Image 1 (cartoon, helix red, strand yellow):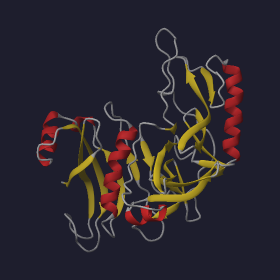
Image 2 (spheres, rainbow, N blue to C red):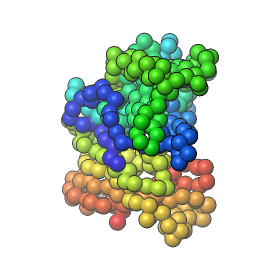
Image 3 (cartoon, helix red, strand yellow):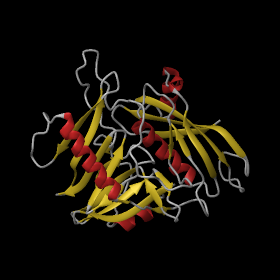
Length: 331
């Protein structure tokens, strides 16, 4: 699977894309509903990837952290001032970017505070905003999100699951205190459609670009997730963020693509190698990516100047329950 993380040449069209049935809802052999796997909306498992130590304001955050190919915007969610930071941008055609994911920050006790992470299903369904609410849509899902008492909360959400023949069942939930667990599919479908119509009428959130290393239009840059049975897209997003940050500091470098190197790189031998590079640190996971890029005209790194590089390797590791660490890169 490929994910566009930087500016494409066409504006996104607001539509709920038809897609193959996925983990949003196959039923098991006994036809009982499988547990719902939430892949859009608020993703609670996503930790704050942006460091902002000693930052008193949102502006301090942007000045302190060089963020390759990232976008930002300031807005209000039900009266709360928030900063949205995203590394999943694509071009809207007017010099701004729309986004398929975002970190959300507010002020708490006079300092920036991480609220959480919101994700859409893809560039056909970018983040949108209406009446102080943030909307996230994607693979058979639509959610309406706001900030209440310094917490990121889902006001309403609706989704679909599927039986083995592909027949859809609709579901709905709200924070109004009601019990919707027994709501019949037909009624949930009406609420799904109403919520999606709100999303269609909402304005796509426009992001300004932070620290863009290229002049003019961005290149098309892809993350190819491949078909991993080990790591999720969220795992890979966290890892590739470190790669983007590093390449972003190579002034004049033109990055073309990033791709997962494959599950066959996840071996005990490579994990031992990572532990050696980490001076014996007890890493539990190893992951590798490959990039294609054109090196800067003037040499300044471990590459020749003004040269096209392909299959340039990046290796990362993490401890049990920890964050990825970028340990080495090159051939």
